[in-house]
Length: 287
Image 1: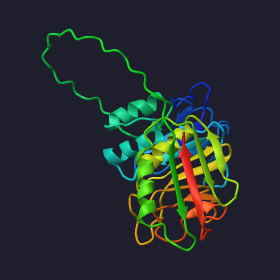
Image 2: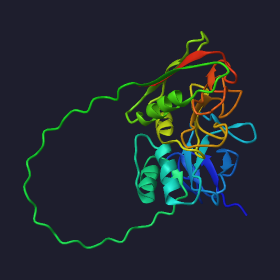
Image 3: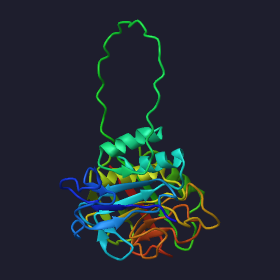
Image 4: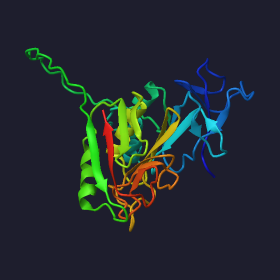
């Protein structure tokens, strides 16, 4: 039998019978079950570690076709490494190394997760005699520079190793801080420029940098759903480099803006038409 629990977006006071994480109420309430706030059942926690986040704009798609004010992520399994990997995608500019570290950061920043935090047993260490050291002069850290992927895709032809390598290199360079992105084409179709959100743009960049097969990330900016991940976006078998960036869904002909450089067939994406598209140069830039 699946293990799950109810969640609600609750920016007000704590509801009796629940736990409060930021603006999220978690658990079975003993009061406040009046339809306001609305409650959503979370994902099956037997399949992986679940992370919940509040969506104040009420734009998170839900299975019944409505929109929700709570969104969920789930790791690929019940392992510490998969939980850390998912937490690194969700967080902004973090690089966790332990599950406890990820849990503490998530809990302190308004997220809930099903990770079972364990208090480490302290190990006594001898007290060292402090040695005076000079105070270093701080060096200013420059703001993150723009990182750009721009390649020409040919109609009816799979992208090939040059484009695949360029995509892998681009993803690995997304290590800075980003608040905007552009995604446009040379085909004259209206693309997306100056898309701005200091939190969600950074999450998209993090998801592209760390993305692997089996983990997906979805967020909404200015009413447009943006997705990073892979279902079967590698013809001949899924590979960890086969990471897609698209609006409206993953591996979907319904996307009107998509990049699938590792797909290994002619459905590499585009702006406007994303399946069997005409020759064009596609550019994705984070800055």
